[in-house]
Structure formats: structure tokens, C-alpha cells
Length: 267
Image (cartoon, rainbow, N blue to C red; front, side, top):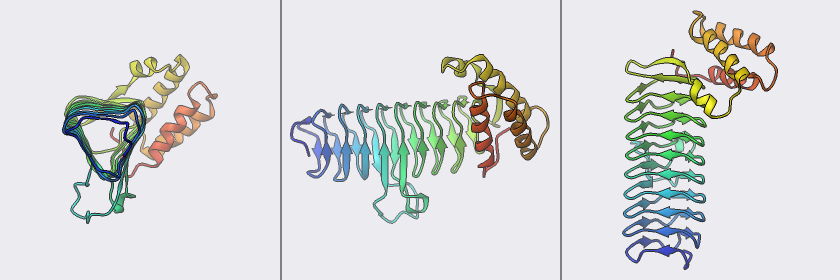
């Protein structure tokens, strides 16, 4: 443990934990033996960070979060599985993020610059990208993948092994049990895709040609009555007529996502 880290006297830090000298640790926090915390990170009061857990730089963990606890999986038998969290994340009060399981690759991952709100749960073997928003009381079951820039509304539950595509936006109090295509708006219970996330794409710098191409792709998948296989063929044809910078890469993102679907695509 780095001697110069700013640690409240009531915090309990294992002697083998590795904290950068600039890390702040609040009152009554508990940090375990195999934890590493990068420069500029702040750990709030009463936080527990345990397991084989690494945090990058400039993360802010608010009070009472539980990070790196063992997976909530009956098959777990005490193996040293991992949790890897990137840099620039805000993790609010009472959030829980578990380490992985050997059956799921042994690692839970959270990327950079995510905004994870109070009472959220990220279960074992989840893969969360960067720049996401995971709102209050969202529950991600084991093995869920959330791609970059996705937004998940509060009180939403996401079934295990489900994927949420990049730039998708999930509405409040939704029940997600199938993969959610990139770039769409979806929500409700029963869950359904409602449209394209046009405002979100504009805010992230997508140009008019990109959005026009994605509107066409959306119609092919959701409005023309095609099977998924037929929709993929139509998307490939569309891609052949689009130049790079006008949505070619975005069609590739959609195609790749559909082709990897195992739980089906929410439509």
C-alpha cells in the first residue's frame, strides 16, 4: 500500500493493496488484498472494494458501493476471478459490481467514462463498454454485454446473456430478454423497439447521411416483414451502395451484431 495515499484513519486497507499516492479513501471504507486503484480515484465512505479488482485513473466511487464482491452464482467455489474497471467512471451509492466466474471467462469488465447510478447491479462476467449511462436500480444479470454509448433507463432488468448494442437507448422500467440492436430506441414491458435513436446520434456527431442510411437500415430490419436472414441480405446490399463516412461502418456494426445474435433480436 502506498504510504502517501490520502486515507481516512478509520478505513481498513490490506497491506498488499496497491493504491496510487493520489488516491483518496473515505471513512470506514474497506479495501482488500488484491485491489489496485489508479491515480486520481476517490473512494467514498463505507465502500467495500474486494476480490481481484483493478480500477484505472480518476474513478469516483460514491459511499456504500460494493465493488469486486464474489459472483452471485451457486457454481462459484471461491476461485480468484477478476473485475477490471477502466478510467473516468462515476459509480454512485449502493452500486454492486461482481467479479467473474470461471465458466464465463473469469472476468467482469467495465470500460471508461461510464455513469453508473445508485443501486445499479452489474453481475458476473458482464462486459460494459465506455460512455454508457446505467440509471438507478438497473440490474444486469450475468454475462450481459452493453456496448459503447448505450443508455439504460432506471428500474430496467436485463436477462443473462443479452446484448445491448452501441448507441441504443432503453426506456424506463423495461424487461430486456433479447438482444437490442445498435442505434435504436426501445423499451416497455412487453419490450419492443420503438424507433431509431436519432436525437442521441445527432448529439454524438452523426452526420445527416449516416442518419439517413441508418433510417433505411431500420426499415429493412423492422418494417418490411423480412426474416432476420433476409434482413441481413438486404443490409449487405445496402452496404454495397453506401460509401465510407456515410454510414458504411454503421451498417457493418448492425450486420455484425445481428449475425452474432444467440437469444434473438428484439423487434
